Length: 153
Ligand SMILES: Cc1cc2nc3c(=O)[nH]c(=O)nc-3n(C[C@H](O)[C@H](O)[C@H](O)COP(=O)(O)O)c2cc1C
Image (tube, rainbow, N blue to C red; front, side, top):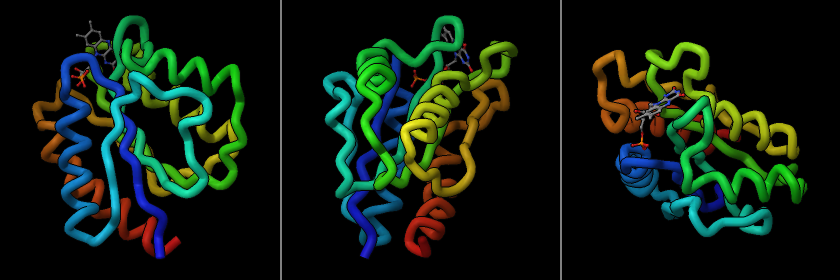
């Protein structure tokens, strides 16, 4: 029996939240308990060993995590909780127009979770807004693939 999944959302204009809703629908259809949490009010104690996580975040500024994710990111970086019991997946939203910092917000979270001992399931998804596809359209396929790996882990 897999642990429930919390989808953590870092967003400025809501696109990552739409992606999270698609992922949540796929998990629900497959019988996985899940919820969506905006990162706004999270801190270093928010990551729970009884759950798995999908991080769903865009990138802003000079390759930064979105404003609503900054406190959470810094709290993890400074508090350095042991995440060795945690499995996670990651869906990054970015735009290759920002060549030097493409999807850096998600890459920063991926690197930090791995540094803190968490185990990534599946490949890091990097959606490129310049490709003309909607990230929420790609989210369902990605989530189905992620769930296949998660349920086999
Ligand atoms: C002011 C601004 C800065 C951005 N900076 C980056 C960046 O450095 N790297 C990147 O890959 N995408 C960057 N993006 C693109 C967004 O991450 C992308 O459009 C994303 O889909 C927005 O998702 P959101 O609505 O959930 O915030 C930027 C967008 C804006 C408007």
